[in-house]
Amino acid sequence: MDFLRTIVARKQDELADRRKRVPLEALRDRPLPAVRDFAAALRSPGLSAIAEIKRKSPSKGPLREDLDPCEIAKSYQDNGAAAISVLTDREFFGGSPEDLTSVKQAVSLPVLRKDFVIDAYQLYESRSMGVDAVLLIVRILSPAQLTEYVALARELKLATLVEVHDEREADRAVQSGAEIIGVNNRNLETFKVSLETALQLKPGIPADRIAVAESGIGSRQDAARLAAAGYDAILVGESLMKAENPGTKLRELLGGTP
Image (cartoon, rainbow, N blue to C red):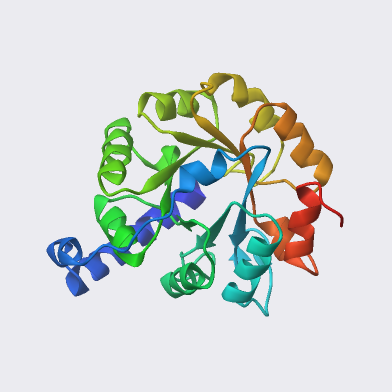
């Protein structure tokens, strides 16, 4: 949890600064862009893919030095992605809101903002940026916060990908009313990755929810195991970013010709 505590503390500082520059009332007064249906994209027949744009990782360092977010997003779209995930955390992942807004303009797919949401302000901020979905990490939110943010996001017409790491968190996600539940195969304390996490937690996700497996998906065989277990979608980042051609790698994961 030390890693998450460090990030949350930094987010609190960032939020204090952003609130001074753009008060919540000003965010609420901004015109809201049209949204794309993130949930519907993941309910498409077969295994859907949320393809991620990720400049660096706290555990792996830089992943792709020559990253052009728009070019990669278009490649993902051309090779079967159902949605695009964009890291907007600058300090730990090298991302930015600018990466996200440029990607949203470059493709017609729904776009997920991947960041560390700890305050309702970030939901209003995301909506004003043109985001279609946001990540909510159960481990960094109280049960009351999680339920509140899922409901507020729904009011704002934002989808939420509610991320869990164990059975207790999965139960909390279900109780919050989350429509989309993501199981992260990465242990955030040790950074070890195991697909067994997703396979073990899948029975606890009700059939009427959208189940997403995240992290550690590097081959067609991995994707096939998760599809056979009943997952509706996968979220893939590092294996795409490290591939010579991210779009070709995505097509391979989804069962197309490598």
